[in-house]
Image (cartoon, rainbow, N blue to C red; front, top):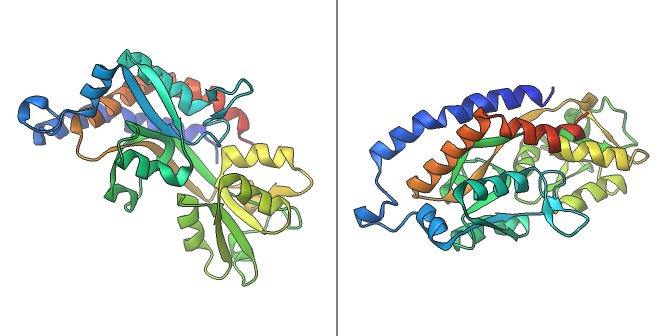
Length: 275
């Protein structure tokens, strides 16, 4: 399974946002200062001259801290372009992954840019934009196992599977492994447990797994024949109820998909990490 096919499907989904925006606005006036409701986050961003983005700078090459100590990566480039198109300054707020949604609810930032997958549970408290990044979930294991080892082979009592705390990989692991032990950790620890032999495998995005295996070839490898067993799509998380801000973000994604920007950034940052 390659990353190119999901990206092409993503372009179709994002372009459809332009048509959907009219439907949203026809059915809701929330966020219009003239309607008596609270001003839209979009108006506040334009007034303050700042776009505040919550992220977790621990997932190279999607979002990380470069050698000069600056935020970098696919998400950061897109956030900077979004700020440029708004005509405002980008402010990056680096938080632990599990603190991002609480931070958005507390108005610490205007959106979450960490490629969150839209799930029913998350959608109880936040709105999601159209998707902007595809993920292939793969099984990374300790090198004691042959590459053809499957989920079924590891679904036994005594086996330990690590996942990122609060992630969709954690949900996937709980559905896929009924007998093994699921341990939720931060991303670096989840990978280290596998390479050290304290865990048998982890479910992780392909763009993270490939570089990790290259850096640790003696202790780790891709299982399940290297094939992805789930494809998901990351989106921006936005404040609930703000139609004007969500519509702008979705239209921005549609425009920057149509002009080739998202593909170019994906080829620059994500594609080189894929096998």
